[in-house]
Image 1 (spheres, helix red, strand yellow):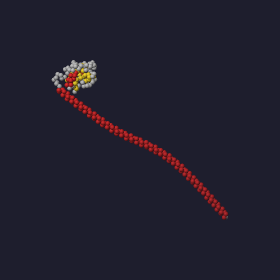
Image 2: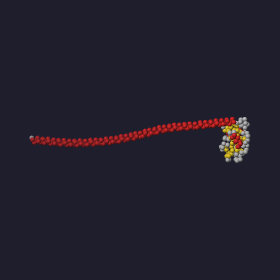
Image 3: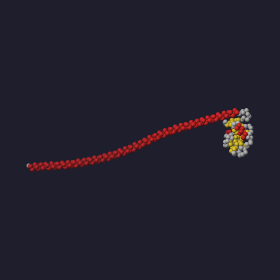
Image 4: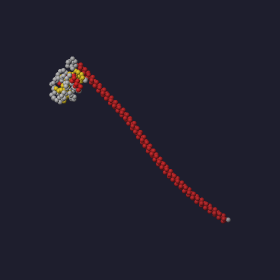
Amino acid sequence: MFESKRSEMSEIIYNDVIRTETLEMYRGEREEMMVDIYDSSEAVRNDEMMINTEMMSNERQQELQHTGRVLVKNRRHRSVQVCLCLLSVLLFTAVIVICVYFNNQGNYNHLQEKKQLILQINNLTKERDELINEREELNRWLNEQDWRSDNFKWIYYNLSFYYISTERRTWSDSRRDCEQREANLLIINNKEEQEFVQNATSGRFNYWIGLSKEGGVWKWVDGTTLKLSFWINRDPGSYSQNFAVISSSGWANRSCDFTTRWICEKII
């Protein structure tokens, strides 16, 4: 019996040992499985983290790229706004400058016009005073004339008085007589005056006019050179006859000792 019990106990112990070893093996395998599972899950997590990291990196890059594009667009927009603001300021400044310029130009033009007007007024005032003085001088001269004299033959034409003599004298003496009358020998300025004198003298006589040749050049008694002429035979070439007379046919030249009538002219 003892052996039987011992055998049973041995079997029981053996079974316990086997069970223990089995449990330990199972525990070891389980631990290994758990380690493998942990490692696998760690690997999975690492992979997920890497994937997430990559996704986050890509998203970050995309976000950064988008942000960069937005920043570039914003910068461009700000640049455009700054340029528009600068152009607006420049345009406003240009408008102000133009307004000031034209205002000053208008004031300058107005001042110049005012000066010109004042100058014209002064010139007109001067001319008026000269006309008044000439009229007073003419009135004094007319009052001094002997209206009862048969030699008083003054006629009026175009702001001038003409004296037509009835005596005969040389050119020099005729000029001296005109100067004593505060006049001078006739100076003909245009065709109308030429025709007036011819009609006034009726073309019956020759009359001295204030034209003579000096140094081969025909000049009027006021020193001006002859420009318009009414010669009968064009410009006479005789050097001995250097003084001009007028007749119904035109002008002719005479010598210094020739005597004839004369015409004095007094300009108002």
